[in-house]
Figure 1 (tube, each protein chain N blue to C red):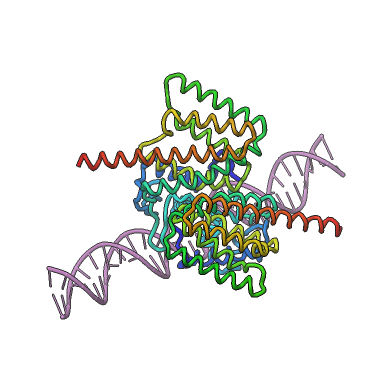
Figure 2 (cartoon, rainbow over the protein chains, first blue to last red):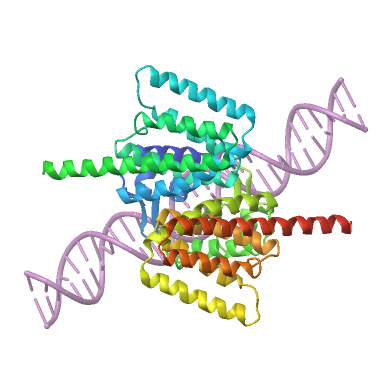
Length: 228
Length: 228
DNA sequence: TATCCATATATTGTCGACAATCTTTGCCTA
DNA sequence: TAGGCAAAGATTGTCGACAATATATGGATA
């Protein structure tokens, strides 16, 4: 089960969290090699600690290892991001379905309150979601599914990768304006305990995000080609 | 990307595979503690190798670790298995959808051939699938999705857990008779390149398996209660 | 000059020892 | 007798050194 707050106890825990942050935020370039000796110097810990941290990064799918060769940060690509969104569509769709069944009334009320504060933000001129707000919304529904397998896969193996893509492709936060309306509809379906509809709307929501991302990335690519 | 055949190169690789086998098959009891020193004696490798193996078992969700306390084999429960099947429904449903789009004609032909050999088995009196046959069918569709994220999550994080449940609850192989017909329909939908239908049928197929499992487990539980 | 092979170098894999933490045992006190 | 505290024991976490493997260098040969 996912713990909620990630509390670092051992030295390996802290190094893992730090390394993950540095990778997600691009401080360590995507595709670059992770030298154990070098990292152990930079992060002032033994190679054993670095190795443990790298192992955990591998299970997040943030790095890839080859025996006797070493570890590299995964290289990002448009196709990779699209694949990730397909997995998200499947898993978060199921999460929404289960949330409609398993969230208790208090949690649903909290979700509605969250939406209200988001509405305030949208009304106040910022006509887009903050990254944090969007994440919070999705997190609550994932946790609301009460399915610990689903939760741990999404939290441990998917979301940090998504954040990495978002940060490094320079598109933090979801697309503008429309996302809020979609969130509202999803919460409405959950409030009505309509599991079927909740899943369908969540899947469409993520599919729209995917398509909008793809368009954006293709446009940027064209721009770069023209510039050359 | 999932490699297909799991080639063990280092000592840690071999120990990991051996440990995973022993856990899945129940040689190491579910819920039992994994003592590093003890394991390093039994498997004749250093503690460092054992620790690496345990780390990998953790990313398969086969063991759970607590800092400064140690690792335990996950304990199995009916609820856990049901959760797992919900995740499977979501992911393999998506896999079937993508397979209908991305499998090339040769692969689909092979899938039809596989089904034909299964039909022979069913006709020849064994009116149920062998475990291996069922797994082979699902593997091909998963690989046919061509989505490397999806593939690695299902192969690395889900399937060994499912096998563990199946083996230890004494229900290897899928439920009888009906499964084959469902497989046939799914392949038909993929052959017709009907992604929508392929997903729907795969989801229903897994949902039926789940329900049949639940019934079976509840019955067994009642038997035990009566016996006492 | 290009290719191949052998040596040298650097990196990862494995090991045993020590340090830090948790658990157990047994004594003391209320 | 029950509860809590302290020391002893056992287990995990961390470290530096050595072994095995991969990569880079450089010279010999066609």
